[in-house]
Length: 420
Length: 169
Image 1 (cartoon, rainbow over the protein chains, first blue to last red):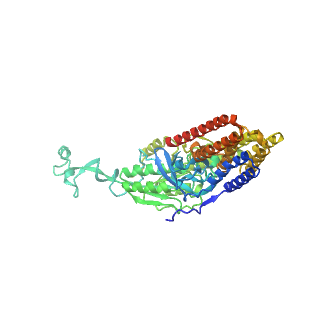
Image 2 (cartoon, helix red, strand yellow; image 1 turned 90 degrees about the vertical axis):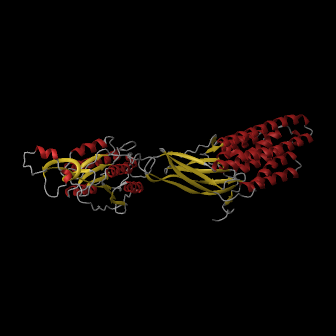
């Protein structure tokens, strides 16, 4: 670590100009024998003398971010500001225009800004830079801008209904399968056959049976099996509710964005399946995106949450369809603004997977949109509606996640169970 | 969405150039005579608008020339006011050149400047009183002392307020 130097301080020139002016005034006053004029030069000379003070050490800005309740708390510290007169700090939240505050060096040593959480995921919260002034505001030191970044995890939610794949896996799990096994669900009574466990013999049923005495009756149970769920996130879009902001990237103005809906959706679906003892995999549809291999348990949930929290929009990313396990329930989380994703959903459905399209396009607002914007948006929405209708026709369950009742829609879809 | 730092009592940064203009106008009215008053007032307004140019130093020079043009025999208690106003003008100019107009200026940030100004004025006002006494303007001495004392109390009060505001944060 380098020792503080004085090289970063610059003189602004005001003190020198004032010093020269003071000397002239004092000289004129004394030269003309005018004590009153010389008296005018005295405060000027004193002020200029203050400006000649030596600079204090090198200062820097440090930022720290913490998430408290529904707020992001950014603590800004100007270190090494002791001895300075004041600091001019320019801070811009969420890439918005900066606000400038002028504070004493003592206040600058500990400032705190409390900002609302606007979006989930990794983001720039605050950018702060400025200048430090000393020696009667004649010395200035520029403070290197610092960026406060935060990664906001999605809220912990659950879905109450689990859509099961058309066929469960062969591994024991939490769901009743249609094959015989050692589950808790009663299936039927049947004559004892070699291989049946003795504890399965139903003595009462055997006694009541009109069959020959030598034939024992056993209680047969359904097997239990786990489901394989795959969550696929289309991270190419991160469009907000404000349609006029779709072309720009101004976090403070775009409103709730599609990834803000997608992240909790992924986390909620994963949490619900993993709690039911199923296996869940997560894939980013974009080629360079991160993924989490199929697995179960609490650690898998935390892994999926971490991966989806770090997922950012990749508008120029190319799609890479993941390899799916046999007979999985596939949750395709997307805005469905283009044909590619819908095509994948149809492909997977035709391959025998149960496909659920989680629509995460926020409810659009057209505030500030001109006629051309409105027309373009209308055409886009009509195309999208056609696309989603087509998915419904091929038995893809479409769940609009922005709808408050998305859980009820999932419950409704869960009732129509296919063959297992 | 604006980043808001809670900084306690504050004033808009534009107060400083306005203060420069007012101090310039006040000093012009005290020092300049006849047509020069209009020039001084107009230049003060220009200085307030263009405070980052050399205009403030030209205004100070103009005011000093105005004082030079005054009859030395006509010295009165206003000298104390002139010394204070010119000093305030210079201090405000230095601050206004550093502080952005569109900013929130914490009152506590003015503490060091107010302290220095107060200390310098204590010495300056004593010297003014001595000069006035030496000139035989004895009757003005109590007036100057009263004005100087009042200003000192004002500055001290400002200092106490800013320090307290800073401590409360």
